[in-house]
Length: 575
Image 1 (spheres, one colour):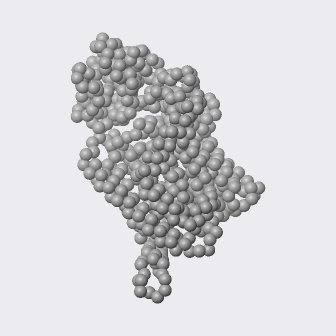
Image 2 (tube, one colour):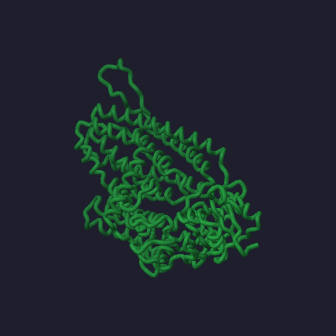
Image 3 (cartoon, rainbow, N blue to C red):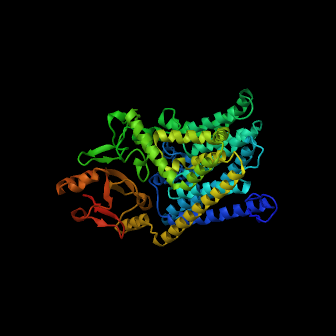
């Protein structure tokens, strides 16, 4: 706790002083943070409970494949397995109905948020000890321990609920969990380089991180390299790092072997290669359906059954609700073709995305620059940040790597926390009476802005609770009313997102008229549209479904599925 002393006291007194019981202050700060995180996180998750990210359908299909022992379809080189395992555990233990399936994913990520907060505290305890150990000044630090915890919790809250959010039903919340653990262990290695248990723990956590997201496979070697160079001599540390590497291989190796065997080549995951091929050339939105020779030669592309507009069939060999979600199969053979122009375009987009994230956390940026300007010895601030390299080096490498391929908020959110903390640590490492007062004032200003934003988002989420509707469930129920049975085959026109209704109805989407070609279809004459319907029917599809068709004649002979934006059309040859 902080208190203001009376100006009548004899002698000059600092404006802010420590409480007589700092442990009680820390307890109150922690309790308040947990209460706010639980309330704000749950309301946000509940307000989004019927939404679903495009990748979530794939994770659900993979989880179901694991539950029924269908490992041929469960082993996937594009989607990492950990999130599917967590979903499989939820489905296997709680058996949620179709109506609550999307809600169960959001509650799973809400649990991930709370675990991430606990792991953040593990990291932050190590950071504070590491910060004190790396300090070369004997003066009183500008921020006391309670102030540092307030800053850390503010950054966690801003990053997890404003930048990442609980909207994406993807493994990124769990990536935060392993990231906080990995950096926390790395800082403890820097403090205690002779403790073998930390190296074993680092290898184990990095293995879990790879199973959560394949990006952590190359990044793990950055962590291991940092563990090798921090503390002790390189020769003495080599054996300990080797042990960490062995543990990492034992955890990550079985899945690497499984996907390499299924692909008949070594791979730790194809997500990065496929994404880079898509954004470099670039490949059209319907990347899994067709790409030009500059991106490689498809080894087994979907079968094209109509030319204008293009219609593709993908009934085999991948099973599941929507077989086209397995990009590691349909894009087998895609090879990035490097061009300087393409790489500069990617970097420009990455800078733009980072700038938008910068604006989301502008209060921290403003506070950091104020502290930096007010310091009399700014060069020493830079040197202080440099001494904290085990904290910021792996996250900086991660952000740089994403910048070369694709940057999204959810990809870099956990790494930004470490970079902000390192920046603030450097900005306040040169203590003085002025910097102490300024640091405290800046901290309070940052927390006020974050608190106002929290109240605003919380209020918005509360109002959103009144307008929730499970559209996917409504579509599935209306399909059942018109005689659709589990196992029926469907065709799709337009966007491949929002197809969770197919899983709930137990049907399979086997043919697609992709986004971009749908305009050709809607503008075509009736005879051409009928030929497209015949092509759909040739794949065994019974119905074709479209979301938000254009008004007017396009909706003739189309049946709206209840009060939803989805419409269906009976294909020829079907009762």
